[in-house]
Image (cartoon, rainbow, N blue to C red; front, side):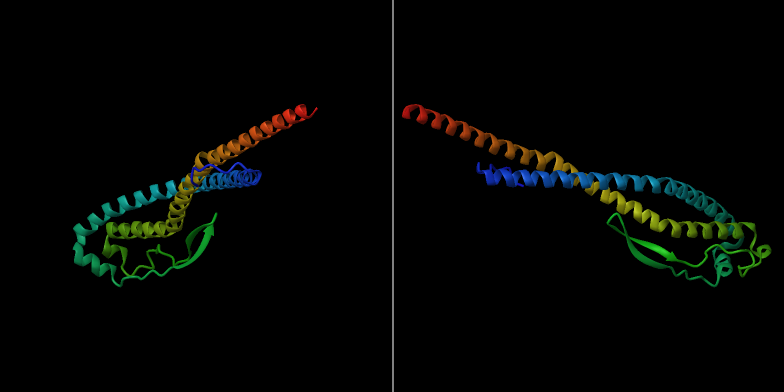
Length: 208
């Protein structure tokens, strides 16, 4: 909105007052949306922090065990133990949270396997190999579970930043300009009314 003066008419005064009212109502709605986004982010923050901590532990333990497995079997040996490779297919659906578009993982196969489900006997693979497989399967499961949450946190953070900018623009720029315009037009109209009143008073005095 440009910083221009309105023509001092009652119609412009009404229009500016209505615009100011709409701006303040819009700012109020955006403030409530911002508060709701903050609450939603705080709900996700604790579970996200716990999941990230567990993922860090899984990755650290998994790579430590993987080094032990590599020293025992070598890369070629581990590739043979890990054959055949598994393909993990997941199903996703789109949705919205507070008007923010997100995607959710709605269906995925179980990632973590029991010892019986693996094709290699633990005795021949060794404890380091079995442990590394278990930790990386757990890490993969955690990553899939966290994908939706992390995307939601990122999208909600962007929406919160955008909403905060909008509130700031309406409350710090648009509303003050409209208030200034309303005050200026009202002041000009009041001055005209006083001048008109004095003019009529002088005219009435002269006619007596």
